[in-house]
Image (tube, rainbow, N blue to C red; front, side):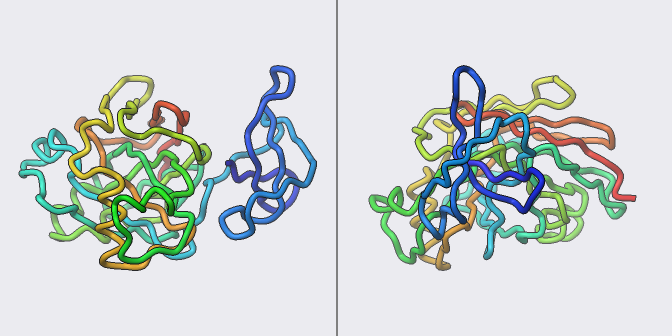
Length: 257
C-alpha cells in the first residue's frame, strides 16, 4: 500500500502492474480505518509523488540495540528486555524528502531498520496473537544526532528532530520477516548489511512487550532496531535503506538553514 500525491490531496493506493507499467490503484479513504475499497481509478506510478506511507496519529515506538553486533559497536551489552524509546510523529517524512541537519548537532547518523505498521488497537496482546494486529511492514531510517544522544544521557532530542524518521516507500502487507536483509548505502557505498534473523527480540515478542506497557493504535509504527554499521552523514549525502521484499527508501541530507 502506498500513500501518494498528484495534483490533489494525499491519497492511498495499491501498487500493481498493468502491461509492464507500474500503477497505483486508488483506494477510498485511509485503509487503516476505512478498509480496502477501490475507486476504480488507476494512475501510472511515475505520475505520482510517493509520501510517507503512514503518518502516525499517535506515536512511533522504537527499539534500541536489538542486534547484538550493533549493541557491541555502541559499547554496550545487548539488553535483556527490549529497550524502548519514542519518536514524535512530526519526525516522519517520506521517500525523497530531505533529512534536515540540525544546527545543534555535529554528528548525525543513519540507522536503517525494518518498521512494523499497526493495523488494530491492541493492549496486552500475546506474541501468538501479535501478527493479527500488524497491518504491514515498511522501511525506516532512525536518524540520530549521536553527539546529543551522548550529551543528554537520554534520547528524546537526539532522535526527535523534524525529518529524523524517514518512512517508505510503501507498506508491504505480505512479508515473511524471519530472515530478510537490511542494507544501508551512503552515496552508493554499502555501510550496513544485516538480516532480521539476527534480531534479539523477535517482532511478535516486541509487539507483545510494547502492548503490555502502552496501547497500540492503528497507524502506530514500531521500529525494530538497526544492524551494525551505523555512521555519520553530512550535508549533501544521499542515504538509501533497502529491505528485501519491500524496496528502497532514499533521502538526501540538507542544511536545515
